[in-house]
Length: 150
Image (tube, rainbow, N blue to C red):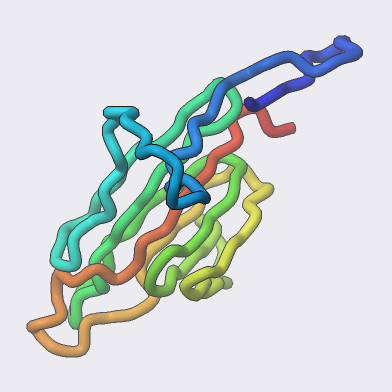
């Protein structure tokens, strides 16, 4: 259960219900026959992809997959706006606030809290080194956007 505290309320109220899709902890537990669509990870050879996951009044979860930057030319870039958390699942991610010269590299497993709601530019940090690598997955990351951040 996901709770939120409404302004002026002394107690939290129920905002959403989340479903745990993990396997049962005990082998003797019966299988869960939920018949719900699952979010499939992108393929190894792909173009840029965006998948929307769980979405509530409070947050939206999205999974992005970007190919390796080509040997020549500009990399595939995503612009994110809002406050939230970026978590890199695979590869490495180049992160910069639009208009800033500085950038940050987030490795696989890296997480960054984004407090500034302004636009952010995200791209794979690595380039293809040969033609056979072009189009391969360069980075997969999750964006958890908080809709009511103060």
